[in-house]
Figure (cartoon, rainbow, N blue to C red):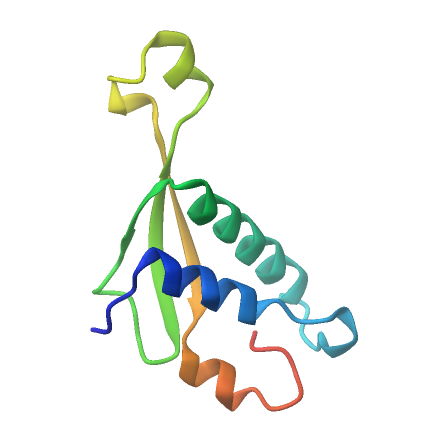
Length: 104
């Protein structure tokens, strides 16, 4: 598995944003929103882990751990209050293969 560093994943997020004129799938709006949220959480420094079992040559799956209201209200030391959220991103290969359309 490639080295999916925070910086690399942020770059993938930035490359995965597609102008609305190139959207061609009913799922594209949700995929674009998800990439944007993933980018923001990675940029913010949230803990993340790439899911090696699910990641393929086309799709990177990762889990990002974020604090919630309860984390701050009841104590950050209690990790049970954090939320684990899953995201999918296109790989470099998928981005290259997309041609002049969106990757989703």
